[in-house]
Length: 201
Length: 395
Image (tube, rainbow over all chains, first blue to last red; front, side, top):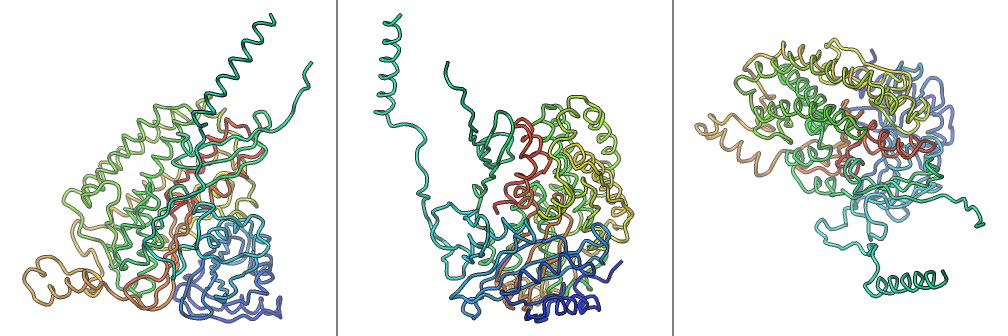
């Protein structure tokens, strides 16, 4: 059994050391948290860091638990995109079971982050959700559409400057049925066709 | 002789389809009866719970999160409370009795959720009587909830800092009675299904997902265990002192609909085992919260007789309490897999961010991988086997 997740143990420094060796360019900053080791990574090297975390035999963070984001308006950098990773221990691989939180600071004026879907395909929908609700654009995402709100929704509801109580009708809705006139015209043309066929016989 | 046309057909399955578990819409591209592509569309049940939670005091969030995954509500509130308590540092002062009661409730909740899964899953594949039997047992679990908190579906019994009140009189006897009867009922379900040819023909070899894909798509829970990844949060990252309980993590290797069925059936038996152990550790009366009146209301008899208790009560319900600045994510093994709340606090009495790690969300994402290449008739069987709850997906 490993130490309780969250305690800053030796395994924590192992992760940081391995990352610094594998991605020397990356700016890695150790954050403080009560539950699990937390690292800040610069967005330029996020994908390389994730690849190392997944593939290095001593790390094996195979499971991307969650991608989410926090809006710290009025602070700057305004957003933080948060990735929770887990190494499942003996259940999947050989590295000791542990958890890790990766965070990327994103400035409010330029909310762009590279996608990690090339490393963790499961990030596809969570990143869409972050884009939908917080308006952070994931560059290189294969299918970056809104997911929870309608396609023509305006604004990003989880931003702190988005009002809580808004009432909006979705406008993408359109009736599936025909108008009465079209319906009548269809019936008439079908009858005419049937008459024509009958006469030919 | 007209020219033979060959083109794929696009079909909307849902959102009003009775077997898509609520309001799930899948745009299917069909080549005859084979599925070429599938695009699940979600969001029909989006209610903005996470945004609403940011306006509420910490203790007011509990009823909201219980309504996310509406088949496992107490597992939601448990996950939320564990995260908040870790951030507040209340874990050390939590009495063991509270922990054991929470374990008992979480496991009963798992039984209740799995019963709905089995009932609806069975019904969708044509075993209608199974649903009647499952809901008969679930009714008794809901009765236990009613006994506990006066509310059958969303009891809000688990609170930050403990429980709402002590166990009611006769609770031990009622749970024991249920636990004595329930394994026999499970045998009954298995007799109806496990060797039933109609059932096996519809489930064996259907909806296969490989180990690598399962992990890559973020599916952690019964779906992963059915393909041979023995990952269970209770075992790998223990919370609520689960390491002191004796139970197995059931796994299968086939990774198909039938394997998921066997895994969940065995999980129910293991849950019964855990319930018995937990129940034997719970005294009939005793402490039910951490006793720190900054966070939990004082007992009513003291509120009515002591000025200080009355003030504490008033402060708690008017201003709430402050949670230290920071962030926390403590996962639990919910009925559908790893489930947890990522919470961020700025040191105030309201959360800055509450984010649910919804296992169903990932399951729906992985759905297209599960059904592409299969037959359209199997889609229903596969959706049932992933046990998705749209309230959990859309939030």
